[in-house]
Amino acid sequence: MQSFLLDYSILHPFLTYFIIFLGIALEGDVILFTSAFLADQGYLNPFIIILVTLLGVGIRDFLWYEIGKKIHASDNWIVARARKIADPFDNHLKDRLFQSVLVAKFVYGLHLAIIMRVGGLKIPMKEFVKADAIATLIWIVAVGGLGFLSSRSVELFAAQDYLKYIEVALAGGVVGYLILHSIISHFSKRLLK
Image (tube, rainbow, N blue to C red; front, side, top):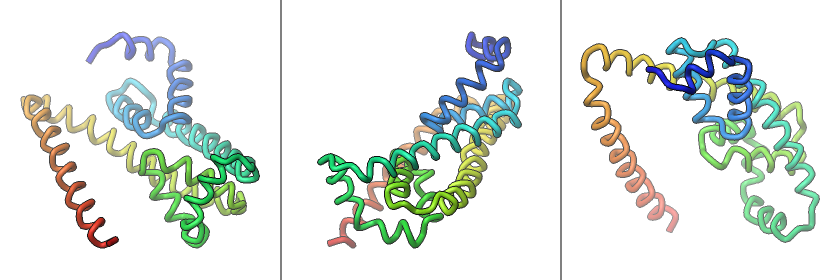
């Protein structure tokens, strides 16, 4: 597996890890998955990836917590509307902070909103950091582990000449996911009526 970006990352490791830090701070899942994949392939140092990930997530979550505290006091109509939408979930968030933060880590687009709401509700920083740190470690193991295992499976399939079937398996997985999502949505809507 040769490419310009991989060769460049070997020649400029500091810049590579800085880009990973920024990517983790902005996006997260895709960057962590890809970094773990490349670490298993030998292109990146897994220990530095873990440190960069922890630093990026920690800084990002702290900043969004603080933004949530500041925005919550605003009289802006957008904030008032968001507050009205989020109000029914506040008790759940206060009573089950860890579970809420953990689930939000794995739901694209929800994580930052939950962190902002935690800040807006003025849940103590110490309580938030404890819940967020444990959830972050679980997230790193899960997503990073998938990247690592994906790397291993590509090596296994390539060695056994099964690589041609991966594309079909991925398409089948997507179709299976869409069917499962449709079934769950259908039953959820029926239960809510």
